[in-house]
Image (tube, rainbow, N blue to C red; front, side):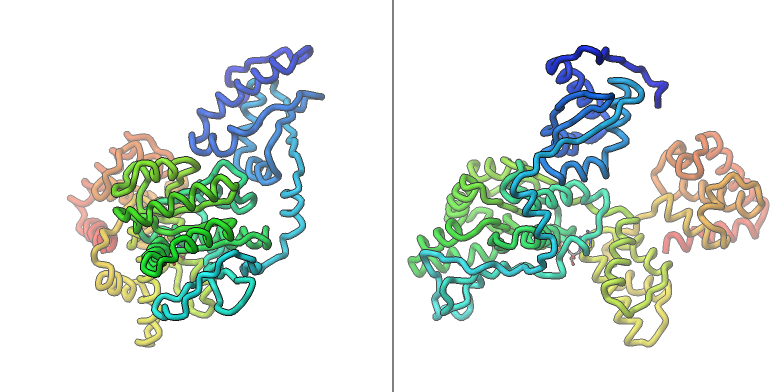
Amino acid sequence: MLTEKIILWDMSDFDKNKLDKIWDECLSILKDIISEDEFRTWFSVVTVSKFEDNFLYINVPSNYYYEHIEAHYLDELIRVIRRVINPSAKLRYVTKVTESDLMTMTSVNHTSIENFPQSAPVIINNPDIKELPNPFIIPGIKPIKIESQLKDEYNFDNFVEGSCNKFARSAGYAVAQNPGKTSFNPLLIYSPVGLGKTHLVHAIGIETKRLHPEKTVLYISADQFLRQYVKSVQDRTTNNFLQFYQVTIDVFIIDDIQFLENKQGSQEIFFQIFNWLHSQGKQIIITSDKAPANMVGFEQRVLSRLKWGLNAELQVPDVQTRINIIKKKLENDGNMHIPDDVVEYLAYSVNTSIRELEGALTSVQAHGVLSKQDITIDLAREIVDRFVKSNTREITIEYIQKMVCNYFNISMEQMLSRSRKGDIVTARHISMYLSRKLTKSSLVAIGDKCGKKDHATVLHACKSVENSCEINKDYRNNVEMIEKRILG
Ligand code: ADP
Ligand code: MG
């Protein structure tokens, strides 16, 4: 690393101005290394404090920032500092311990997700409305009790991290530490259906309650919010409805905001609630099936509010994350054993949403139990074909390599090694050949994933497989058999 261009600053007589410049220089390099979103989230608020005894002291807003930066960006940060200042410079963090930090530290053991009773000036409680009971109030109890509506099992522990959700997850975690006090207000999480929005916002709510049990957290789907609003209009209790949200809630989580599309009245009331809560430093968390820029049927002023804080996307998880998610579910389920190759098969085959993945897993488990058959790849294939036919199986280089390794009964490490043993070389060649045939990857990309070979080596491997297929029937049969397995 130290072969990079080194700009050595003369640190003997620096002043604060110069130090700020040095830090700006560090930040500008860091900006090129990490993503813009990450930079904005984690470094835009970090400032420099002093340089002493070869330590650069930086100010971070809280312990949480310190821990996160240490865990995720330490290497990059040190590299940059050493490049800009001197090759042995070191780093220290300065955090101001605020009251809320102290509270965080002392309340870790709290597990309750119940809200404390609230003294509210109004009680929305209409016993006539049987089909639409107000979910937040238990009738007859004063002061009123507000049900958080949070589901225990949707917690952070069960929310598997992957690059698809890393950013949204960290932002959510930061919000739970300091609800209403970060710049992520509102925090808006968006994605198509089944990718974990509901789960994640519950996790944020649960974590908030764990850290700040005195705060009143409310989760509500926009659909439920809309129905309540409509009912309040019919009953002429809209003012109560409005006051309920404005007076009692500290953390307001509203799920699937797209339900308010083209609903002017409910948008208006949402707008008022939003403005009030925001001005009072209360936290607002919103989910949507698309980014605000692509939302239609919303008033401009509502959209502009949605863009105020942080918008974070949840993406389709990669194969490894899908495998981890299935394993997590199995771990939580307890007794049902599913062999690893079936887990992998499901993860590779169901690549649309996590909800579908869970559906496929449940079907496989159910069939295993009902038919008293062992759960095998064949059973899984049958079920996936029958139940999730709409999926186009994702054929990746890794998947091809796995199938080829299985066929030759060798490990992935052997495949990626430099070994010249007959079977291993054949497997390596066939996986390059099939990757070229069955994926859209370039020769360079294939070479890269097959043990860092260059494109000429891949081309050579492909040619050699084609030649062998022409002159050797057994060899051709093997290749065809593997291809069939891969295509399912
Ligand atoms: P959405 O609200 O985006 O439609 P959900 O939050 O309802 O998606 O997620 C669908 C299912 O997938 C839920 O059962 C949820 O627990 C599960 N799920 C989503 N993301 C994850 C994850 N990262 N780790 C574990 N399970 C997840
Ligand atoms: Mg949802």
